[in-house]
Image (cartoon, rainbow, N blue to C red; front, side, top):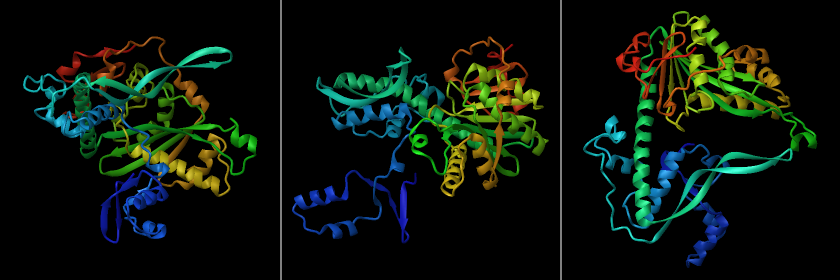
Length: 432
């Protein structure tokens, strides 16, 4: 969402109304002011807008949100003078780009606390937190449990809130450091891509609900709609414009089997269109159920080599901060599909979605993934070794089939084929 709005050459920060114009006019009148409702509406500044559904923030980072809740609570009771997370992190570190400072290993700022405006008291402070909870539900007369995220109102004494803040600061500054370093590494990898390299930025889009142009009531309100899985890809190569790709499937598997079934035609496309490319540099977010797990580690050090590539690197953005061009591809495909439905076309199945949208999107290369491709992708060992510390890893390299090397942060200081230097070789893991 754009944060600014420009009209007649005047650019202003966008502001959202937290009430209706009727209620705001009533409050205006209750304060002793005088203006008719039509005049009040006409005088509304152009940068003050009513809140729309699109203005909702639905992809917030849990680490940022929870830290912000605590910081806002401390500022509201006068314990600190600033609640800006970036300012607070800068105050707690010698250098924002220093790894030791971020990981609390620096002797100078390791014990740095927060500068309080006053002494904490026993007064209770309330603040919100996003936390995992267990939800029970009944299905087929069987009681089952599921993990859900809930927003919980917590209450602590001011002294305990300060300790909670210091504890979260240790996690937050590390989170911000990794976020910045991975974003920087991604920019540098695109700017310095070599002739024999291809950057493959990937992500699963939210499943698309297939629809008819005209539906009977039982279909519209029932569970008759099929879903289509969309896997979006952006390819970056040397001296050529990026290529946008999207694969469509009726199979909703987003694990390693689904990932490499969707990537199969993309790898073939790279081999055909860019014959000089021998090294693949993948970039994605790091969900443990999809890209960042042992099954995908095994596939990334086997499938690319079978496809004819000689080296592969898989890099992960920091948790909850992997948005990019691939999300725009998914939005474009869905927006085009919605337009086709409004124009009288049915996209009631994933196949029809591909057949209707594909010819209309000249800027996005699309493939349909059959169920047979998923069956071929199921061939995996029954036992794959667990890679300890997976959550801390943000780069996996492989220059030999069946062997991977990992790093906490992405590094592109050397050519991919020779990147397994001494600090990485000690972490070699063989997957057989």
